[in-house]
Length: 173
Image (cartoon, rainbow, N blue to C red; front, side):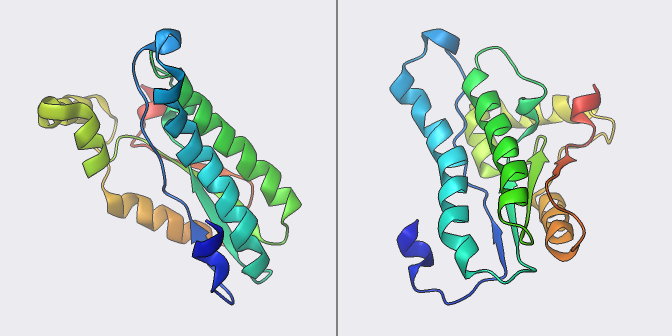
């Protein structure tokens, strides 16, 4: 991560989307198989802030990505929920520590991406359709939905230390 930011003189905004989905096995799962879930989401966010923030102007922003599993955990996905919750706590803490640079977190719900399709496997289309019917907005999210929310966080100079949930109502049902 240090080399990523090393040659940059300045940057205005950082948006971290790195995540590894780790589901299954619960406490019986192999710890090494679960480690990438924490390494990419939490440590990736930490290092991006550590090496990026010193190159930012006072009105810059950092946006981390968590997920609704922090509030709606599923059996076997404890580490995924923990990594989301940890990133949100990191975001709130760094909002105070790095002020006036703004630090926020975005918590997406089910977003139609290759990552999610890969996790769901051969039944991805059927699962997405079933979940779409369950959500209050009657559809799953698109990458554009998240991009618009991130742009709001980058542009709004009076928003810091929050987790913005963009989930189509997932946490309600």
